[in-house]
Length: 245
Image (cartoon, rainbow, N blue to C red; front, top):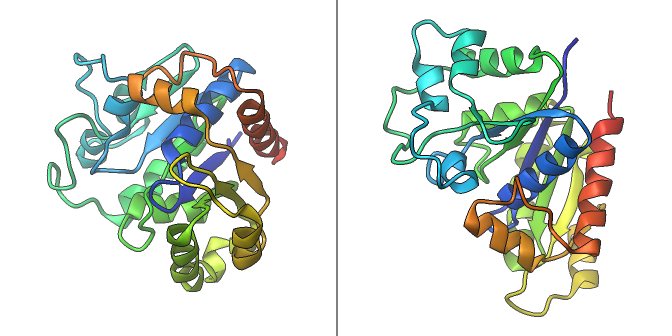
């Protein structure tokens, strides 16, 4: 049975990683096995999600660059952060130049292999640059659900306008994206005006100080956030994901 791929995509500062980790924790608590794929080479996911883990030498880059690339090689490079959540990402002190350039065919094969992984759903923490990141572009193209996060400010609005012409291509199924406005604590935001300017916004993800704190501590996958509004939003997104066949 092929399992779901969920892409969490959006502009810089829209809490993509926080949302991806929160979704993974919620779905894992419901008994779903999750592989979190980190597409970012400038801020690798593994040392962010599990900063105290220094002995694990596996890496997404190592898997993709292997001559013997197959399912076993992928599994060998997944760090099990909890009983139900594994992380496949670049590791600390790695970047885009650490490994040779990966072919599009290898990226395609990665997602095909992950989709076939038994009893497991895949959440991809994408970058903001769909035109430069092959991992991000392929995740958004192949995903069963794309959650697009946009900050409630000029940055989100400008990003939305600049990316729309790219995403309108038929391969991206842009009209099916679950578009969420992401709030910040930095300044007061006019949600109504931004929703009107962006159009087709499915909901709002409130700023959650505890989620930000736990992300900073590297404990977001293991600690429950005590914030009813935030948890309700994550639950709603997870239910959309789990409903998709």
